[in-house]
Length: 167
Image (cartoon, rainbow, N blue to C red):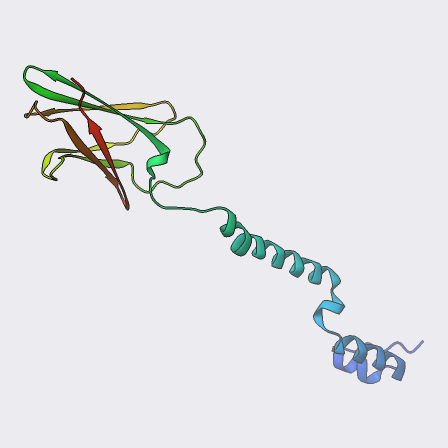
């Protein structure tokens, strides 16, 4: 019968007919995407995913690494007790879903008089679950204060509230 086996790809091509040689050359000259159409589809899908991940999503979703005052509610109450001014601050986390990463869970609270002198300060931990509350009470020596400022800072954010004291 005269079967001949060739060990390499090159030997098979050199011993084959001219039609087979042309077919091999034609196939070898095609680009990788024409030889493998599924690879082209996978590459296009990858480009679409990268487009969404790195271009479109950052335009619409702002990811921050800091706590913002809007994430938490602050409520202040003042009373005079034993000739001292008691300032109570309630920090609570809201129920709305917030898509922000929090890098720090502590807040620094500084109580300032209107002229800017520091009356008292404290560092507290934020509540982490929705509905949790944190109460902080400051005893201020001067009961004659009419108003004061509360400066809240955590990480990169800082917010100042002016509080008037009702008697």
